[in-house]
Length: 74
Image (tube, rainbow, N blue to C red; front, side, top):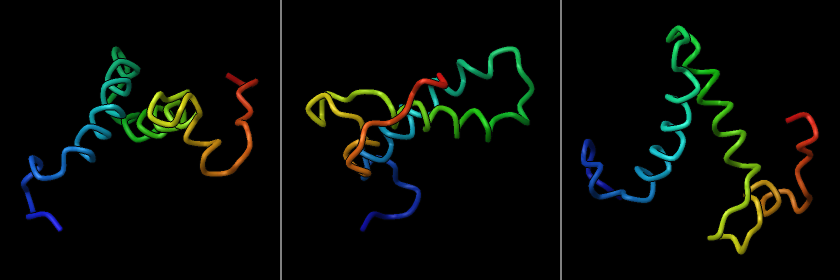
């Protein structure tokens, strides 16, 4: 349990927020802000389908569903 409004107590969640928000801001550059929700979803989608050193070079998608993600549409 963490105290409300104290992000310093939950560093893992704050780092994940930053990991998602930074590419979102890059994608939104020059676009209207009403697309924020869609770019956050897309950023999360891409993050879940990229390899991570913390998971021994596996994707979060593969760890969750036990199969390789289909990235042919990207």
